[in-house]
Length: 422
Image (cartoon, rainbow, N blue to C red):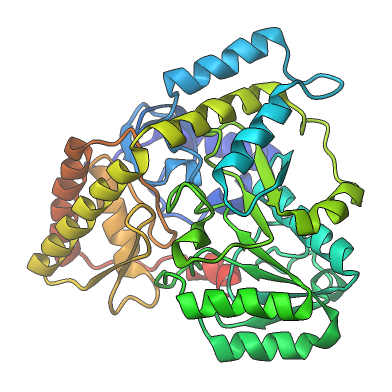
């Protein structure tokens, strides 16, 4: 039976009156299937409850911030203790120094850290630091890579001028020749090579980094005097306890972090080596809430769990269980389901589904069975998940494949999605 989602519908109607478009960003109205909730009431562990009280096993993990479970007691206790002492003060507490020490102690290339709030803050700081260090302008990036929502990097062009996107040259991810051509086109004006930890572009299969590509990016940066930046906002701590490119033996000069290193509390970071220290010390970046102490307390506890628990190994095992089980069930149902990327950050796309009709139908059927998946964005596993959760998801998937077998899938809102494909 299809749910009415009456509370969610009422909230949408109210939102239309006071929020442009009714919603914005990655949850904008129309991007997800029509039956997906826009509003949620609470989260616990690996589960969300929508505004109508429906319980959902959540494979989006708040688009990444949930690493150890919604409302993790140990992390939240640290946050609350600090809130009771002081949070937003005229300046930072000692926790800022402690967090910088802890983070740089974990990340191989890092000698210093600066903290901010969003991933876009961190990537923008990296760009400015690179330009300050080199006194050059041009940034080389991979086509389709997401580095944030500021005018210089937003995927949507509405309200953006050509000048906002100036001094950028694009290459194809994992294509050494394309990377070399982009660097050559920059000439003697190359400030930085920005690299995603893996190819995690929207709507297309994820691809892990080719070691040859990663090492060539490192060499080209060294040869030109530019800085190599790895944007680990999305993948940080989900592939390695170090920077993600440590898995291919490459250390960047700068790395950007966010989402999960405080388990959902608002903080992000720019980490760098001593080569870039002087430049970072002379740029002007700030925010009224960048010194907040409570998120730093949460981050210290999260990093302690990262160091001392087997969270990464456990979610890797769970991810393999999910991947193998979905492959078996999709094949039995007669569908080609491509599962790409790290098993801790899975993406599901159907063969012969250019307009996402199959993906939207299947995702809606999963939702109806209490499992929240995404039809075109990579997902995330968290350490609060269990084998029983994975088995629940596999049972839901089996039922969802049966729905898809007998369905005439409706058109996904490709016109709404077009800007992401641009």
